[in-house]
Length: 405
Length: 231
Image 1 (cartoon, rainbow over the protein chains, first blue to last red):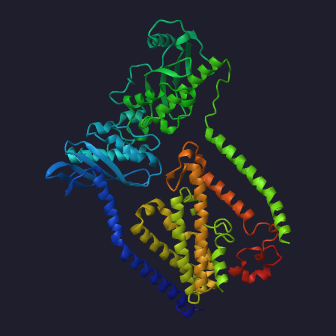
Image 2: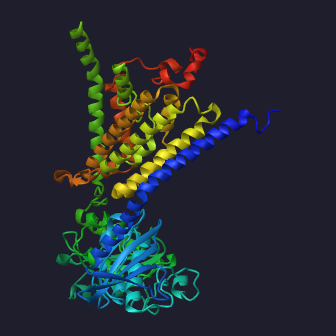
Image 3: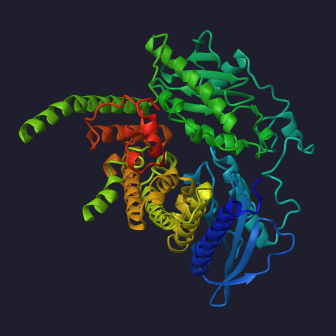
């Protein structure tokens, strides 16, 4: 039996080891010549970001005790020996990794600018650099009210938390639990609203005493209130509708639609909506009504009145075609499920109105996806060209062969 | 001799293009062709690694024992990839950030190990370096061609510069994976039809003699045993 330490066994091991050492020496040599420049580039990136967020002379300061873990460095910024503000560098956990930020804060504790210095997020990359612009001019109170954006809720929540941490650190307002808002867990027993699946913010329109879904008489009364006059309303409620409970014709004033969602494609949501559609098929008024949602179950900041209000405002003047082509990014962050459910309900209501207008049971079934048409036409064109080339090539080669003879 | 060396370099560009003819390195070919800048960076980095690793492996071909040749090749390739990464991080930090993980994945790009195994260990240093350079340039051209189509049609821009009249007529499919596969397939078809191998009879047997890399393949040593057996 061949010994383990025989020449046949040792030679490959020695050669492999020698190659490893040589390669390691090569890498070490390259690193020796480049590490300073790389470190400089990293520092330059952060330095450039400091200059972008606030201008002046930077003096590093100790990060206060008890400051949030996300705060890495704190700088006092002066201009001609006068305090102009502070700059804070932070690192927070995003969706797919750490997000690095630099925040500039003026002497009054308001955000001047925030820039993202590093991130490896997979969602919402394009919007993140613009998202930080929403915090310009906010302080420790108003920064809380900035919405995150749908499609990248975790990433934008992390950025929001980081900026709030920066502002709190500078203003000396270091909360006991600075991570409370974006890391609420459904199992947190102190958060009864999350465990019940209700949004329960103080200024929400949803109050436990209010019965969410209205009777016909109540809707007729609300419709008159919306129209601003007593008008005879024709009951045109469609059969077999999933969300539309009542649809009334109001003559020249258009249509009044009341739709209710019990559960939707967007999760466990209970909501109702009353809106007026003009005879041109566009939404004229939307009445704010009650809603209950399980958004809070996912550990995000629960939706509040202003969050859902933002979605209502987007609906005014929109037609069926525009609303049915709303993508996730058009919904409202922190109320994605609620706004998604409202979108479904309103889309069905507009379809019902279109059915009535056209006298056609199918209504106006818009082709919402022009991209599919363009791709289809492009593919057909490419296939046609490829077929033509395939047929023409033998003829060309034959002619070349003849001319070469 | 000069024309032979030139043909060694040129064959990697069209006749044996690693991406469009040999169909190797499809992972970076699809992942880094969403943008012309990324494609160019990936092509240049791969070319440098190919050239260097082929030259070194060829220089060590009589030293490396057969039974540990693959680990040795991987170590050499990984060393050069790491060196390229370090240089890129120092000199081109923005490109380095854009390329991300795919720079390190050049180590497992089968073009590099494939050429080391099929050519560098059987040929001289200069020929191997030229082969590596040719394959790298062919890889670069293929990636840039794919990226041009995908970025122009998918994003309405070229190398990050927006094309004004295409801004509202983009087909986002091309910027995503399905579009990448589509463009890849169409380019392969085009090269098969227009390239030097066009007009050849369709392969009926898959023995070594019908393989474009037979002349430099280690398995070709046994090809006479397999000839006509459909192996």
